[in-house]
Length: 282
Image (tube, rainbow, N blue to C red):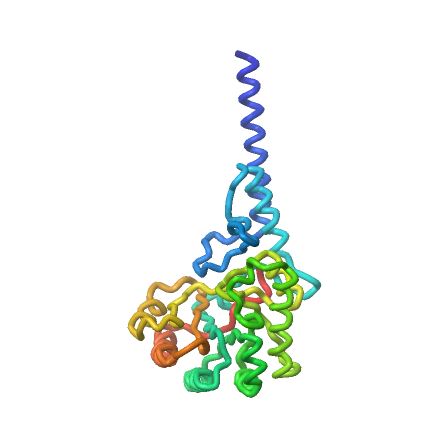
């Protein structure tokens, strides 16, 4: 009986030690208290999301937390974390508007006009080949004081299943295409096509000075669900300091333009101010 009691005590002490180690790793990683709402998770090629499973018990969970801590660190002396940003800058009622899949010769000018009318600065996540095709639109976006975001070379939503060398090419070449249109203007964010990040793609972006960018509100305007559906989503219960996703490319964006015309003044009436996505804090 004495041996059994001693063994039980040893097991309890080992469990306490493992729990304390895990808590320390989670604290070091700066793990958020809420789950991602944008589908932007780390995916290993042909495998499940990385770091989101406790497979292997406490030891597996501890390893995942340690990996996340390493990934959340700043890279290459850039001061930019590799953790995915989903919050607007600021500490109060700020909102970050992001615009994806352009530039587009029909819709980007209309989005710019709407933003200008309501004194809103946004972040434009541009596809490299489109920036290369329409450099004057990239310059127009930058001239209005908006932030630039790399959305890869050609929006390959399967790139998270491709080799790291391919991911690097898509990220860095996309950034270069945007920069060529506006020399001297920084590209400050990277958004993976479809939100399909990998630990490698996040590290590549951060090392190049771009914060991996997710979102917290997605009205799925790209699918043209109707103006009412878009507004219902973006005017619903908003998380703190939301990053809201819209599109100016990829098809008919008339519903997006109409939604922005109503949504931007509504946000102002609700006491929100506009900022860019958080970039330099974990």
